[in-house]
Image 1 (cartoon, rainbow, N blue to C red):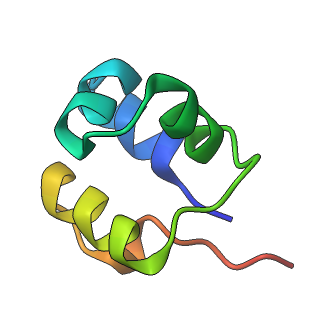
Image 2 (cartoon, one colour; image 1 turned 90 degrees about the vertical axis):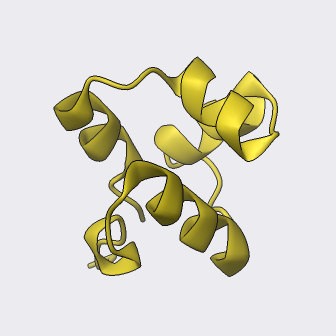
Length: 63
């Protein structure tokens, strides 16, 4: 599970902007944001860098 949606909302960033920065389709990023699919580890690091946060801040434990 990830917190990408929460971080985007807190920073006022649109999914389309993140998709453009990642070089991914909107549908792919939307899948990440809605937790329908999980990004690979290297993509998580890219997302964290783009959002200027630590990777640990976008991962939440799946209980």
